[in-house]
Length: 441
Image (cartoon, rainbow, N blue to C red; front, side, top):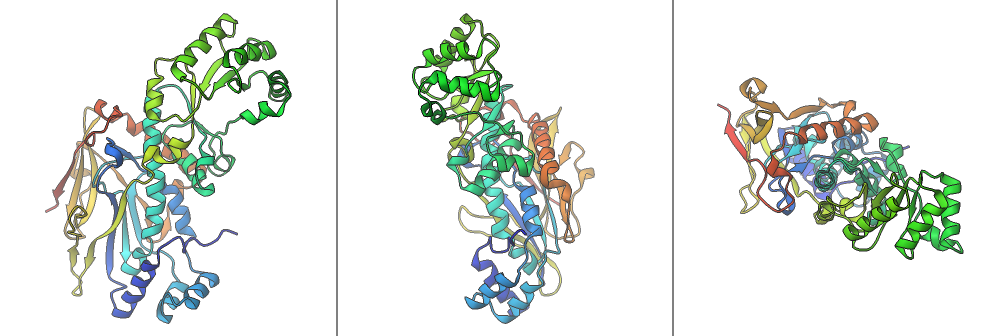
């Protein structure tokens, strides 16, 4: 039995809920928006990831006996709030960018509509999932672009928390990686898994030859042998002598990879192993992958860099109230005005403006009220970006599980083709396309 996700939150969400129950504002219809003010690290685009995971966690967002007892025993909220939380289920509506979609500063990635009490308690859960997964997916997409047609495998579980490792593997897969070393990610999300042996396997045996022979005996000649435990050149010679010229591959995990890869390719060809592939690992990031573009490398394994967002482990997204009903029942756009942290009030509809199939702008139509919201009909030269994820409490299950993960991956690879060429560069710069806000009248 899975545990409730309701405590994956911050205390102040429940204290605000309790206060709103006390002063009568808890039932006010409200619109919250999850967005990013800027792209981390001067990157040119971001990738939305985590939506499917969030929806599954939303199914589990309820307060059972154990949660209520903790809140009561630690005097977190009063009796009225406890009674409210006892029956809590999200009954509002959530619209958002499809998982795998690209986003830019100001993109309304998630719009949560419901009563204040309904929506305010989801802030931390939504941000913790999307901030982490989107950071990983954005880094992974940049690596995938740098790799071109060469496959990438995610192998960073040992550099992340045990649960975040599974989420990171999923996000990397959505953004273009083809496999993961993490078995739980394979089981839970249907991601192909890979892995053969580490240096400890070679060190276990009395000789490198004993290790290679045992691995080939167990996994067949199509396996990949790790040849850099001792001397790389000797390791390659031994690998082919043991497995023959039809050896599946060799892996390089150290050295000056562009130089070493070239030397190993020459050596393999001279030995007649022209079909043996070269996989490289060793602290790769998008820049190292790009530097290997001209080298005879067949695939990459990436660990630390991808699971940590390649230096930017959070996407910097925020969750803000942008519209609410006032005491008279009229809709009011609200916004934070703090220096460098301002938000833009109003309910929003988002469109990607295209020119001959290439994205040229993120167009955000802003409505001060609630009734009038732009649709695709008002933007014939654009692609609508938002879909209904939760409709009056009913979660669209097509975004969850194995099928949802595969769909998100397919969507990302398709929409990435719409990026302008300048978006593919790895250097820091302004976003690849501008975000423009237009008022709905």
